[in-house]
Image (cartoon, rainbow, N blue to C red):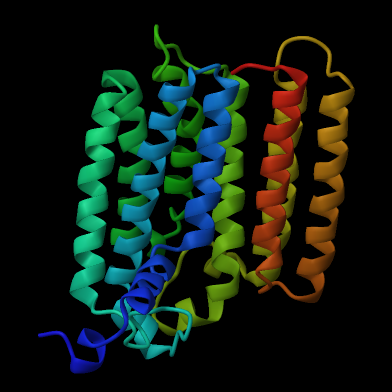
Length: 285
């Protein structure tokens, strides 16, 4: 039974609460990365849009399932940024939304063909595996490494004919995924510890996690600059220089405040700079 306060809540407020429960910033960030690698893979517009939608719905299912599964834990530590924790959304609604998004991403992935579809679903499986238990273990980084590493493969394996991306793209994606995990967990370390979560970041501490995220992020950019065949041009060096500046700023920020959300924002900025620069330089996966 939905509480009266929820049942009479204006539609726009319920829609906003549902949107917040999907982890909007990571969802949008990963979707943008997916769209970017689709462009770098040279996919036609329609095919690229299909890849983007498959990734987007997959991220929705991951975000909603995360909030659904963590509702009691978030409530116990008074997470005011979580709609379920403050009673702004009924748990069954979020659970149903997660299942609907899962069905949609499965259908969209199937439309990409066997190879591209399986690659897209591997990302979703990684996200659900993290939510269902790996987030509390020292292997918490592994789903992120695999999922982000597979992002370029979703695009290239959805091409006609399908092909694997270059090794440097897989490596850069995996490194970016580990950095994303470390940066994403940082603001929640204290709340996680209070509810029994013991992932890799919790084991090494906030300062080491923040510094590691910045160093790994710079490593991802290094792979993107020196990985492709041929000598790096001015655009590549510009991207690397920008990444170094942002990563350095993230390190300085980590020294002052390891729990800041700005470290995750720095990761996103570097990733988008790298993608934009590679698009301008005319590189292909």
